[in-house]
Image (cartoon, rainbow, N blue to C red; front, top):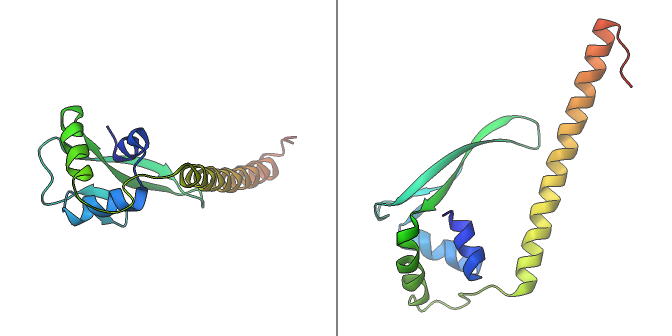
Length: 131
């Protein structure tokens, strides 16, 4: 299960949850995303996937997954951490979704521009008109 899925399923506060995971050295933040940390138990793994960024370029991003059997223990430790703001409120969730959707739209718009320009160039070179 991905960490973001755990966060969503339990309604955890994003900053608090990921901050706690970093403080416990269960995850580390890298330029590619999150990867397993030095104290991560067996069953936590780094998942690599390829994405196309807002400039149309491919890049590898990482996320951390947790074996289903470890989720209850991880949740229990987080809840016993004594940290404030363990849970997100609904406003935070809707803002998070809005930001994610806004970013996805931006990426799609950029990709569409790149595709349109590529089609225009192919049309000019081949003499075939695309509409």
